[in-house]
Length: 163
Image (cartoon, helix red, strand yellow):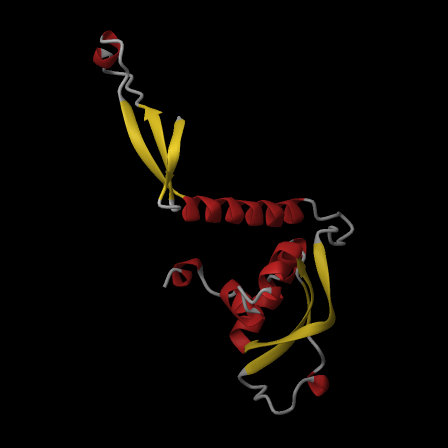
């Protein structure tokens, strides 16, 4: 692949040699066929960021120490952030707490008397977030990803996330 130029500050223009295993006719003439390819810079940049984000999360998950302590790539929240979710969502988070811990999410559920009494405790449940992966903390700090939306999305089935 040969980079030709940048187009309109949005695309990278490249020339790529076409690979055809079954048809050697273009090789006979001595001129291989070339394709012009435009790469969306924004999409390419976003893909690099997402792959880095996923690599970090997977690294945290796989390198979770055998004694149950978190890796160094997390941020402690002081004071812990209180999050309010539906009882169903909170129940799902409770059941996946060990897995979330391997991803550097440290959660706890305060005793009911210390919870906000104005909240309808039959419908909602409050929990505390004590630490998050560093890559998530950066997204939350810049308000790219609200905390409540993050934990609410973790409780949805994969089929409903695409909606």
